[in-house]
Length: 90
Image (cartoon, rainbow, N blue to C red; front, top):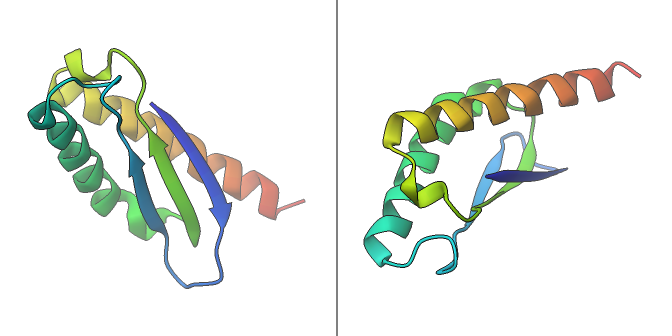
């Protein structure tokens, strides 16, 4: 998965999802990826800066079990938090 983020003028982060048919053939698989991603975002959103975040699915992500997908998202959220903290201190 890939995260794209830009600052917004609000007091909270927002999430957008781009999970195409190339990533997951069935609607069930796409919805599972979206559901896991939304739940992970809800868990981490209090620690995120006010950003507009888009999560892009990549081929192969639908084959990942829920726990592995959650761990991958956790790493992405941490990386995003660290990058935002580093850019605001400059």
